[in-house]
Image (cartoon, rainbow, N blue to C red; front, side, top):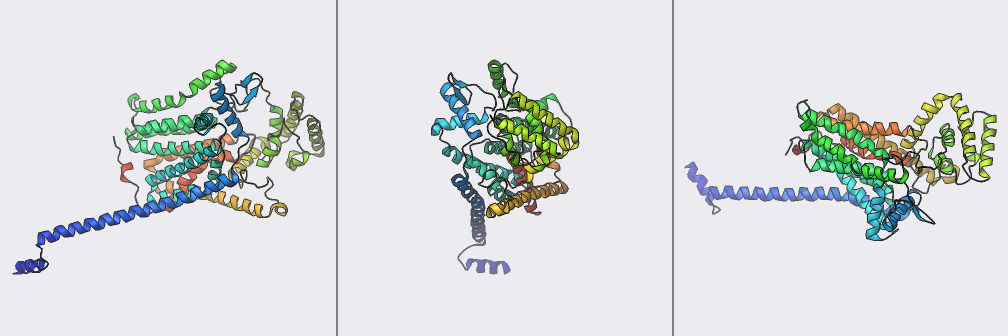
Length: 507
């Protein structure tokens, strides 16, 4: 009777129990499809918002902070002469372009391709293209965070990177920075995908290789990238091979390492044939063979220089314009006699603004006095101070803010902007540092090799910056992609696991 009652009640709507279940299942599927559609739309909106804000920020910089000068014109000159005269050089003399090796060919190759499309010396289309590349870098970093920490972390990374003014503003300048940041993001994203795919021959191996090879062609110090990533790749193979290594298992890593070096071979051969020197990278001094290097002046400069203002007012002006004693800080002198001696050298130099060997000897003698007075200052204190300045200064070099940005009586509003910039810069470093520490504390075992490569890249880059004469904040921009990823760990959900696909090696 109960069964009959069920049939009667069910058939009250004109349906059998079987047809009712089928209808219920269909309705559930429809609701699931609606929920999935709404979920996808919600995710698309959350992704579109930071990208739209990031695009607006970059377009504002293009309109108000674009700079086409200095190194941009050197790279542009090389690209133009390369296309027109088949000569890799930026200066044109009576006999045509003069070859050079002071810049690697990665960025001139990019500019040459753009000149082919947009026309010679048309830099604004290049700036817009760089803005798009920079936003794609943000997407890559977001995807990496998503695979490591989950969806919320991915969205956090997208917001952190898309709205970071320090990286975004360089999209408005035709320089190597934007493409370098892109290669760093692509390298670490591809490394994680390669590990997840089984660490063998696959598309991600070639993606890692191409990203690092081009990164080295962009800037010589980017050799630090394969120096940390290739050992991480060996570590990954060792770990996935149950801590045993063989030549066959390591062959993909060896092939990648060779392919990274291959683009430097024609460059090295060209330099040897043209200049009769072995120069696989750009020289540290940024001079062509035969050009004088003012080592005495550089030694003297390193005995007191810290701030970017020192670089722009003194270091870059030597051998081109006057050097004023008033531009030197008080730490440049140990005594009244040393002040008088320095003033005398600068006064003699300013008569012709010519860096002769005689001046270099006088600067060297002055440098030796100061080094002997305090070797600790020269070898440790000042290098660390320069590194700290590059890491934590307000970074106003691309904005219309005076070099003495702390001068409240003269700049007021811009001084406030500079302090806000310094606070934001420090916040990124604190966020990244805490995120890295928490990631390590919560266990990064599946991604230990990736994490070690990231940390190693930062450590090696900072160690290299300790050896530089000139303090330039843009040399630390390459750290920011990793800060974005590390900082996103603070926003990950404890209940949210990253995609299972990254935990299961695939063919």
